[in-house]
Length: 521
Image 1: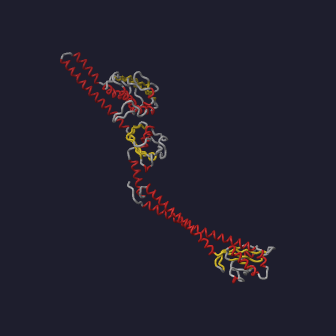
Image 2: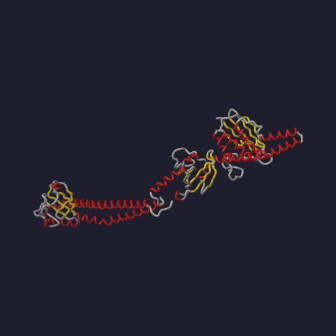
Image 3: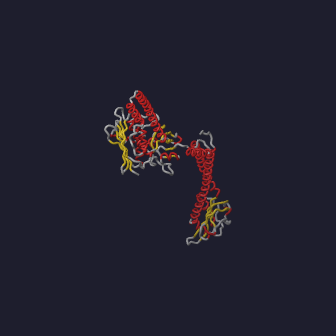
């Protein structure tokens, strides 16, 4: 897919994030202003209450309330307190609210504007009220004599305009912090939008949905097994064909390792390689698979690989059948040529009147045309067919094929017997050298099962390699184009294992002896 220069999705995300940041920062800034105002109000209330309580217990104030002219003493005293505390007014009054002092001397003798009843009863009052100087936060407390009698009241206030000035003084810090947060949030939103653009390749939501739908359709429609694994060998994507080819269990597989899922080691070895792998053969159970591995690219993550699996089981069987048919055709062509020569000899002998010699030559020609193992009677027809087929190839290669049979039709499927005996004979035919070329096949049934033994006069298998010989890819022969090596004996081992039998390499001098035992089901 081509990379777009712009994306509506990215623009929408950027706008949404910026708006969210601005709303959040604006809300926090408003909350900060409100909190600053509330803190200033609380501070003013605490200041006025503390100042009023300190003034009420001042002995000079208590004494002045009992004097003939309280204002003469209280007015200068409250002025000093007002200056020292920075409050707007300090008022000393009677229980009825008649002022003895005030910030404006002209207001002395007038009645106090505000709530005083709780204080006159011995309590305290803190409130915001509009008085003669304007709105203010004020506190009113009683002045008591030594015997506890309430002699008068003290009111201390702070104008709200001064409180607002304190809040305004905090505004630059609040606004500066909010602006910095907004700029930082917008920058982070822009960075996030750029990242989203790279990760989505500039695609719009509907294009992403369509791409996913196409990916899912292709994944399940392709007739090859498709597997995507991460660098640790865990499954990322798998289609139904890959499940069938690898024998994977049902249910979700994403995030599970290939070893955990029981994938054949030969397949895991190819998948775990680095770089690109083309047309590598591997066995998965009894299936012959053609495996390709391609790195998924940096966008999918380093080490992530796409693996395709193609079933070559039928093709491998067809190649083997082709080779067998070619061998039979070549053998039959040679036999036809030989038969024609013998018939010419018979005809010449008849013309010369040597009828006895002609009869012997004709009989020999007929016996040769019946086939190399025609005189061998095999109880199991499947084994008989395999031996007859391989007999032509043995004759064509100059190999003496000897069969010793003691079998009857058994419960094993023709496909399994064909795989076992056919691959053992193919391996023996390839192993026998020029000179003494002989293959002996022994077939025997007993109460426990069936034993198939193929002995050849080849170079033999070293003791150290008798275990590896049944591993896929092991072979002493050079691979030919279109005919991979190292698969036949591995297939034999897996079929025998599935049937609960055993296969091993026995000692033979000279050559090799492959022995298979199949228990009765």
